[in-house]
Length: 395
Image 1 (cartoon, one colour):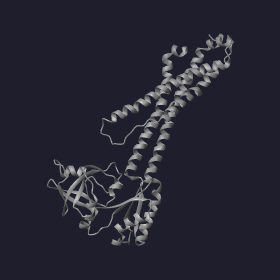
Image 2: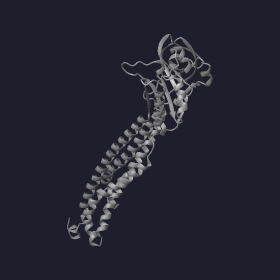
Image 3: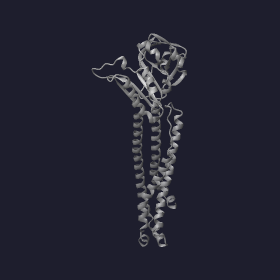
Image 4: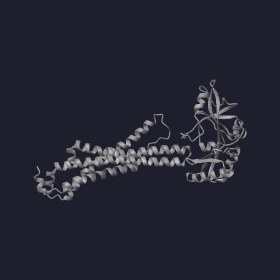
């Protein structure tokens, strides 16, 4: 300790590399966890346990018929035939126009079945969602996306107002938005109008489902539900018809693998920083041993054993690395708290959290101290091997 106090600047500069390396370990894990939680949270919010199916073009020379379309009977067959399905719904979207502010604007008119909200879990900004009466009575009611509501009714509350979509006029009962970005896996556009599914028949003349959704009771059953839905659709339609039956589990697994790979790469970079700091410790300790050769000779001359000299310099290296690790960890822990407080004041997407990984804190401290011991051993061993007579005559 006296030696470190006598060379404060040298000790602090030596410690700086350990501070950076240990802080990097904690921050890398923190950033990786925050990114992983956000990405996985976004995907799961879309529906990692949702299976969706649609009719695919059968290819050259093949034509699709009305019987190839997914029907409400298919929807009921999946609900009854797959025990792992908790909710099943369908939608049919068509391109239409809405007159807003004397201007015709293109919109996506989306007809949805009863359990669509249970699966997609839209956020109702104002008003309400469809109830059972809206489906059974074919009520001409609709919900607008937030952007569509601002465009069609820039100065008024849209709830209770009428809007004309094509040839029909609808009463707006609510305004909604999706809870998260859906990575293009949705029929909901920026300007969309949701209506009860039976009303789509007025526009298309049929009651086919363009996209079928089946929600598994837990993520472990997604693959089984995907296979069962594909088999039911294939069994209920002609062999030439092709259906795309997919889920978001593959995207979820890919996100996890990418996050793990990035974490490993960043940790390797942090380890390189620690190795560089360890080399710095070794160099400074070698200089210290050279400068204190006479001190080592005096200690040996009055009875200090080799092990005591070794432990003295190992302790010095450990103190430098340990103190640097504590400072670095302190900096790494303070930064996420500061960022979290700042994010509360900024318009950032909801769901961003910056967790502190306490195992990474322990890892950073242990690795930093181990770096000091490993790289401090060579100078300590050199000091312990000095001969007393040669050390006393060094100067």
